[in-house]
Image 1 (cartoon, one colour):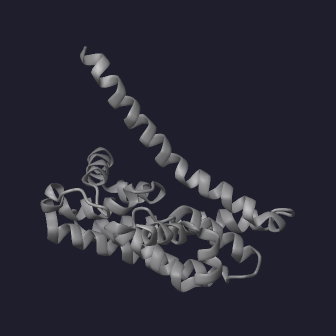
Image 2: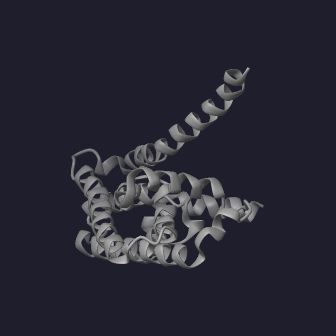
Image 3: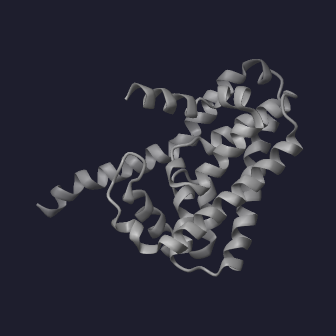
Length: 213
């Protein structure tokens, strides 16, 4: 299992990923996080903000960066949609494994049931949910043209807003000299919603027996 831990560390080390992997690695990761079920653990938000910081420092071209990552985000959701449309409800009965947890799929399904088509936009800013939302849309036979409009707008808004935040931060005097600290803060903030959601679920499960008693 040491190789798996080492791989996970490399895939979540956003600073090294941006510095060493460059545009090719970032494009692949953004596609995988939104288009492949196994990409739910990848650092989408923090990766985009970090890329924006590097662009502000002149290490990446902000226009090329945004163009490639917007395409990757849209293509990823499109792949997820068609996968969900073809596989359908079979995924709900698939057993839990190292790279798949049906609870993530149910969470995205419940979110989709509550918010409808705009889930495709909202989910872009929600780790894990953004991986499974397009799959659920495909399962629900959402009209593809309608899905595509949400997909394009959501992908564009997500990428530009996240890289824009990083670019703005990178232009602030003092931030450029402390880029490691900025990236650490971004990573913490990006995983905070997941931690909060996990804490809520844990608290609900803990209170359930007391309520039943």
